[in-house]
Image (cartoon, rainbow, N blue to C red; front, side, top):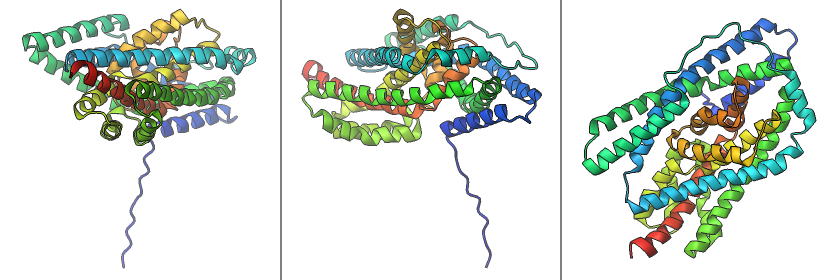
Length: 402
């Protein structure tokens, strides 16, 4: 009787790999027998990845934002405009809500002692060498070009019934960008983070940072749940439906998103949730897939909270006018975020300098803090999609269909 030696493969998700990288980085930085040169090797690898990321970001903006805008004009005219404005408004409200919660609660545990520990520790060791990879375009130029190209292509397709070659080129370039994200950027993020945490651990600032991280994490999850509940209460009140029943019907969609970390992968389950909420077939088939792309209130809550926490940690300006401009810009830019783990924060990275989050150390912390709860932000996004679907279905029945 022969025995089969089957190997069991355990797949670790992005969050799991990130947490492992953080733990290994902290251990390497604190172990007394690890030489400084080894830390510098890790920091050098992080620096090389950072240089490539800086080169790739303008290309990512052109590839994703152009395609996203070109696609948004496909729809039912007035209904598309109402849905897009509702989703964008919800995203802005979510970010604004997060800012006021963060500025009122975070200072209670981001104390001056912790801030001093972080700033006094400094940047740690420096890389052995750097490779300057100059981006083809500046970020602002890439944004303007992407918006211009996307709007022109959408106009050609709708008004002239042309532009097929340009649109196909845009689609193929988007595939290139998504492939690089999926095969290079996202898989190497844990290595990028490991080098940063090893350096912070070596410099002595890591435990001050982690004492802030877990509290931000808990507060962000509470904000997600509270905001989604408020969306369903508002939608149910407007549509004359029981908000508690709407929330109950959304539970399968919420946990599917937590498990997959993908708005796109949750669409089939979310459509069933919308059907259970009594949303008509034509509306749920239109609104749920569209909002999976353009409604990002959960991600905005997370990014705003993490950005505010970082600004407090480094004792930088964090006025409402500064953050609100960032929220408005990000609400549009994140429309291009690919429906994969880490997509939203990758779309947000080019705009972090708007609020003063510059340099590898701060940006790596931002990515780390965001990715640890990315699945919960996605779950809040897709849950809010169905609240919007309830509202749009009511508007459609009362104002448009009639």
